[in-house]
Amino acid sequence: MAVARLRMSRTALLPVVFLAFCLLPAASASLWLLVLLVVPVVLAAWVLRVGVDLGEDGVTVRSLVAARTVPWAEVSGIRVGERSDLWLVTTAGTQLRMPVLRPRDLPRISALTNGRIPAP
Image (cartoon, rainbow, N blue to C red):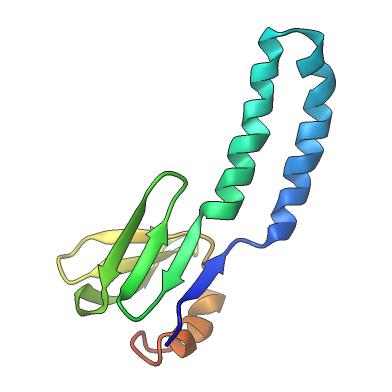
């Protein structure tokens, strides 16, 4: 099984670019307001980085600044939260939020993991 990268759609960068263009007049008005341009840069980094990688060695959950890999032997299952977000449950009882994934993605996750995570 090759590594499957489940990320946010790159079309989410369009509002970030629009925000950057809207902030340009304010940022060019003063040297101190150039700091406002950090917001679209951080948002773009978030869109490009956040996601889940499914590979031979386990599940890697990526946030903006960190990543955590859980080996398949430690994966207990997936829990659906109250707001339809998915949580990776480990055998130790800890849970990791799986960003950008929703319950509609469970059949695709099952197929990508070769049945290691069963389809509902």
